Image: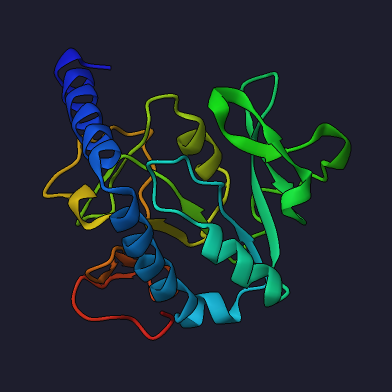
Length: 209
């Protein structure tokens, strides 16, 4: 990785993580509810059967409301597991009772309850990140697990749930980095790419949302 890009990524990541951690907990909860509700109101969610998400870290957009509603709606859910070989795999998430702490303190499914799904089994995938830009570029946390995994999911829609301050004019990008298709913040839904029509849709909201 060229040093300027590495440093640019590191600096932006640190700045965004600092902003997230400085949020008032009550404000984080309020804004998270608004972001999640935008997703729950979308046709994309309502038509979906199988969804991959993740259990939020304390400073991220909080997804508990999403999981609660998805369980009520009978959705089939999966969350990531980082294996001993440092490969991300989606594992079926059937109940909060099956959770345990995985690598980096990230919640995943207990070993005895693990049922693995294929990377292309999902109607859409909710993707975390430190920052995003208006071209759908994503800055992760630096380990590369998601980029490696998302490269194997084909045309599965990738949706980021983020605080509005996580949107940047430009995020540093390399050939192995994988874009998201939709960014949902408390302020708006930014549809980046319509994978069905194969066209850019930066203006307006496509009908599949």
